[in-house]
Image (cartoon, rainbow, N blue to C red; front, side, top):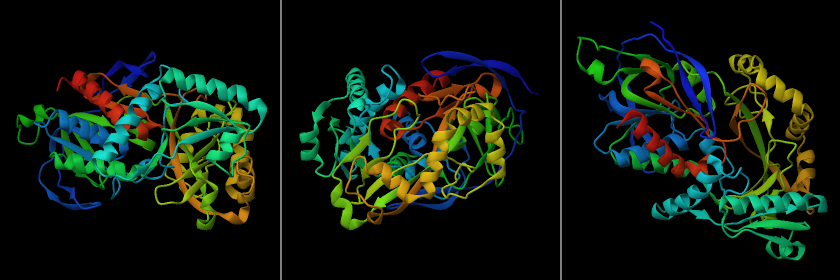
Length: 466
């Protein structure tokens, strides 16, 4: 029997009431594939255990960080992570620029601001403790024109409010000393910004989780959540593990509680458990260029533009990577497939779902000119290089090649506004009261992952009384 109720839509900056519909009870069982610890990756083997105290849906960096934190706090409980791909960290966690952000950009008092500043220190310590290579490259946010300087100064003030350490504004001569090939009138120097392979960090979280007794199931794509009052044979275990999680291939696991960290599919997972469809996840693909190896000397550290307040993105930038290569870009193009890494990738369901949402139509209407420009730069490498030449005038089209792409999950409200903070969501009723959803975790979620994990673990502990 379906139930109706209300839940608090939690952005930790305000409360919004939505309607919730809960799913019908159901019982099922099946065998699964689980991953065991490998040297650098996860392999599969059989397991019989399918009942857990807490199941984390989503094997990206936020889900794995939360799983690790939970099992460290509650080693006596049983935990599992479900991941739909063959490998952990297959999407956003493994397709990003690899920047360790310092916390400059975010609204003072927001979760992004607080958790990024906290997460930066935790990330560096974790990498040191686990022998994960990283580099403190620093970052220059460069004002090329004098009219950008007031915005740069406001950014400095914001960073100060957020508690970002070591910030200073430098002039053209010092820009040249730090980045000999970069042009600018002033810049904001952020010395604690760094670079790391976030995919490797996420997989390290996964190894920590497994070493502590947690189980990771790959190729488990969740299609439904159901409440189960009794198990087959009228066993009392049906009451102990009332949530049945159903996979695409008829796999099932049962849980007392569920934490959903679904990334690009976080809205759909939330809807399956009776939560609101808003905020809706919209995917934006970013196409990077790469400096040719013989030209990597043009860039020493991260070089970023002063953000334009008219647009929702940071703009093109130069990002060194831990392997010695240098990323340039990205652009930001609306995708027609949530995991569409190539320009012509298309999925009818994803496209219809996006087009039907009025918030997306409002966003497109508001920023269509920007969108057309980004699409053009995606097709035309010279147009993208022209943007980059504002900062490094020596750069030429022949100095770059096509690089990787990533798809960013961005939550969008009904008014066409990109949700600017991390969003967490919970429901009520038989099913919803046993679930917690991470609805929006864009950048700087990787930098913030260990701090987010601590906050989630606190919330899970309080909400579910572990």
